[in-house]
Length: 131
Image (cartoon, rainbow, N blue to C red; front, side, top):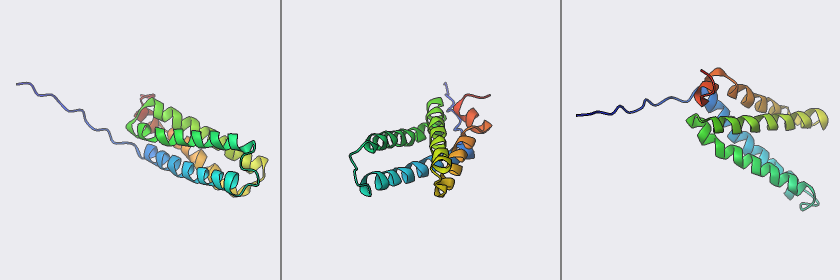
């Protein structure tokens, strides 16, 4: 009689779960703000900003779609959410320091938090890119 061992379930590290939660919250809040300020409260909702809004909504949807694979520990999920976190942080730096929109400091800090959490050793080991 042959018995097959079931693979041990690997618990998702806290850093990865926290990063996933931040990605979901940031994507939801920034998409809501983008729709409200870019479409609803805008005098010309079909102007050049519509292309930017569509691109940002598509990137947020991609990041949200990558969260389950991030939690499973795939390299793709880690890479997609990490790149989105870097781009989100870059955009927040522009908003805070370029546009003097100091209300976005919290978003900047949260974006830095996503990048920092995904750069931890436990997150990289979970994704299989560090030993």
